Each structure stands twice: as C-alpha cells, then as structure tokens.
Image (cartoon, rainbow, N blue to C red; front, side, top):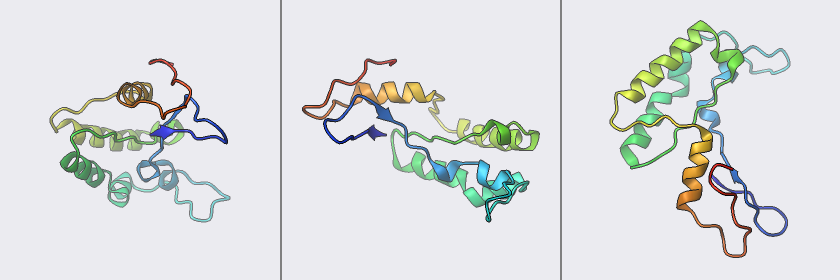
Length: 129
C-alpha cells in the first residue's frame, strides 16, 4: 500500500494494491471475448494452480506482520463449490497462531497510524476516512 502520487504534491489517499495472484475470477468464470478464459474449473485445480496456501505459508514464515488480500468476486465465489474452496483456505489460515481477519478499511487505518506522510504532502485523512 502506498500514497497515490499525482502531478504535483502527494495527496491524502491510501491505495490498496490488489493481489491478482489471489484472484479467483479468471479460472472460475467463462468470458466469451477473453481467449484464455477457462470457466468452470475444478476448485481443487484452482487451489493447486494459484498456490494460495504456499503464498500464505511463505509470508507467515518470513514476516512478523503481513497482509494477505484475496480478490473475491460475488458472481464467482457465491457458487457452492467455490465457497467450499474459500472455506478450505480460511480453515488453513486459522490453524496458524494469530491470524486476524480485517476489512480493507482497517488495513488503511493501520497503515496511516504507522506511516507519516512525506514532507510537504497534504496531511492524510484522519483514521476512518
């Protein structure tokens, strides 16, 4: 996560960086106009292909604190077989010590509380804004 840099002084917004490696839509939704669209892929194959567990294990081993954002689309993850895939990932994460489930708004507030704006930048929005 970092500040958005415009042509001029830095502004007061924090940008959440999406992790497209943890995106379930491309392999799980068929899109006619997209040549590499899979659609209807077995959830266990997606888990193996995307290696979500391995990403989490690496971050857990290497960092004291980290954010593990997943990109979840309701039109894909609302399907029963995909819900089960997310349940398996959540259960795996919860087996570790200290997992904390938070909203992206809470991630932004945590970032603001630990990082001062660059010199000359506008003051960042208050926590919760």
